[in-house]
Image (cartoon, one colour):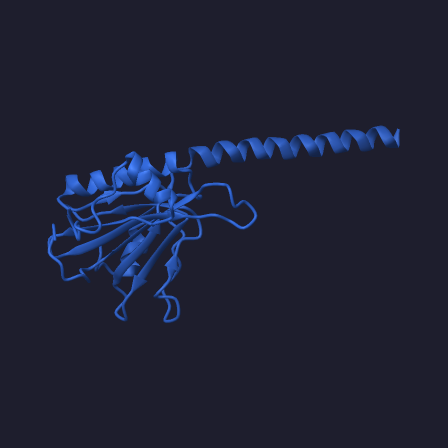
Length: 208
């Protein structure tokens, strides 16, 4: 009798756990993605209020690395030069001493990607820049990244191609893709995209 009751109890607990896992899975899929909404120069406290994210409270010690603890989409909300990224596990903001955000670093992915997965992300971001009026610059040595055979060979050689974009005299972006190979899986090709956004730091004019 005792053994029968024990088995029933174990099955009840197992069913409860499975039921909770199923409900949690539905919730995770239905929950809107986290989102960080900002433009350069906005107060960090305002960005936290208008975003749905895990950005931390600003302190004197963390203002140069204000990062999300759960993946979030970046919505750059400038009315002319705005764009949207895929969800990012690495999204970090940098605030000046007055608490205004002056730079962003983001890898718009939740994991390292195969090249066939990474290239559409790169191309879509550059197309959004073009539609928003961003202009490529430093193109003689660093033209916009294209999805063709030569570029893929270049990327697989771990050359880390980079494109540069400027929005009038307001913002500049550097966008690159580089190899990411772990010691335990040296033959597993994976790639990491990095986008750095801030006020102009290069003196070149667009198309130089």
